[in-house]
Image 1 (cartoon, one colour):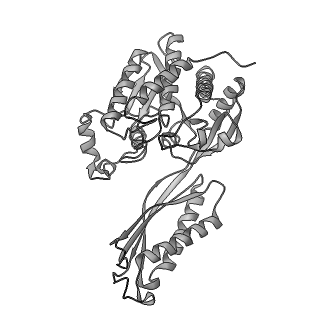
Image 2 (image 1 turned 90 degrees about the horizontal axis):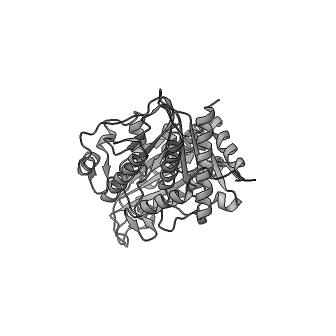
Image 3 (image 1 turned 45 degrees about the vertical axis):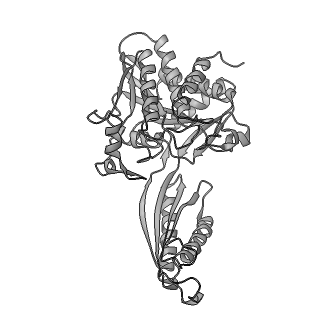
Amino acid sequence: MDSPPLTDTDRVLADLRALRAFGRDRTGVSRPAYSAADMEARRWLAARMREIGLAVSIDGVGNVIGRDPDASRAVLLGSHTDSVPSGGWLDGALGIAYALQTARAWRAAATGVGRLGIDVVSFADEEGAFLGCLGSRAFCGELSDRDMEAVRPGGVRLREALAEAGLTGAPLRGLDPARHLAYVEAHIEQGPRLEAAAVDIGVVEAIVGLRRQRIHFAGRADHAGTTPMAMRADAAAALFALAGELGAAFARVATPTSVWNTGVVRVAPGAANVVPVEAELVLEYRDVSDAQLDRMTETARALVAAAEGRGDVAVTMEDVGGLCPAAMDPRLVARIEKAAAARGASTMRLASGAGHDAMILAPHVPTAMLFVPSIGGRSHDVSEDTAEADIRRGAEVYAAAVMDILAGGIP
């Protein structure tokens, strides 16, 4: 028999629908970091945290942090409320609604000063309008002065955006290792695996790391009608040839969790009657293993070296950043599976192919993630959705796992 409800799932849905009003975009939302809609959502969340008795601050990068004022140690629950442009209504927000309701239930039941508690955090700019997982990086002491000079496409600097959002001068808040005994995050899967397998709950074992390389091709501009093919130094032709070689080579060295993408391609001057003088692509690849990411990097470097000078085109590769893979705490993985089993929910262990704030927290505090299915695997689009029954079930399992951690600690 299923366990009785642990949390008010009607309230979870109400909070999610309230959040969707900030930056609503058809059936989704547009809440890029530090936009008016993003800051409205943060102020709304801060007010909800205060209503349940948390001590709330919005720090210098926009993280909304609610601390249980009566607790000496706490489980930290969180996610994010910013979105990609024309994104989904649940990406990030689901984890915040779950965290808020779990803290609400705990505060209503717990008594006494010095007890265990729940802190809630909504991290800023998880989606990377300026820098991916910016808020959690700052929270974990990983935000550099150079990072603070980040520029959004369009030329807006991070410091300018923070000032426009009214955050100049607000202190940064950070993870407290003496206080925070675990971090737990819930999220929609953003992919099709749970739905395809008809599984209720995804239990994340690891979050992939990623690397990005910018590959530049320098050729020579010529008239496209009068220059013989064999006499061209065509930067675009070199780009397309190398892109195909990269895809084939990565397929040979890939693991089951390896993925890669060429999501940015630029060709100049971009005229139909001019042989391209310059071209550029940004290559991204992900895996749960640093060693595999190194292998893919070396594969790309070898192909770039082989392509250099071919057809009189100069080819260079520049590392433009990345994130390290993160393993979830196996003790917390077991807690989630236990909570799901007690509520009659099926589970599947899986790796997250998307980055999350949990990957930043994991090296600093025991961390776990729970996924609920995404309809059609859709995400980062207004069509993103999850069945109401799956939202409710996920809220119950999440709350049960957190309560289990609070009751028994981390063995």
